[in-house]
Image 1 (cartoon, one colour):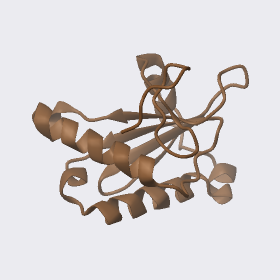
Image 2: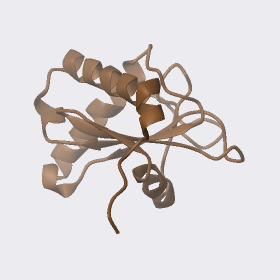
Image 3: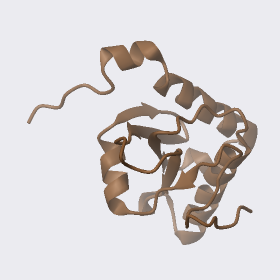
Image 4: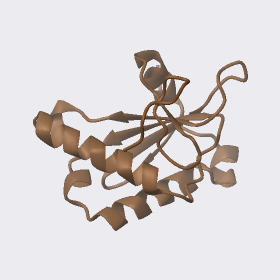
Length: 139
């Protein structure tokens, strides 16, 4: 298990991804691009240049997915999938939020890792960035 770092965040993978812990960071990431998968929804947002460098990842597991034991197990599985993803294409100036779904508990672990890699590839696709990260919602 990864221990705390001197900066105060946990290191999740070999690339040195930190953790999102403040609600404001989660809210800002929700305004960015989104990719859905069977086991989770992945949100990403590019941070401002004056903020800290390095990718940061946050995890959200709602009560709708189950009781605290189930939610914690899902969160541990997602954290481990990120940690073991040696070739994850996390951009250093981005915040990522994984919003778990119930399928993250029952999906076999290698498939969960592949799904995470595919979601990150979709987010990093240059065609997607040119077309706009998310359609505008009517106000």
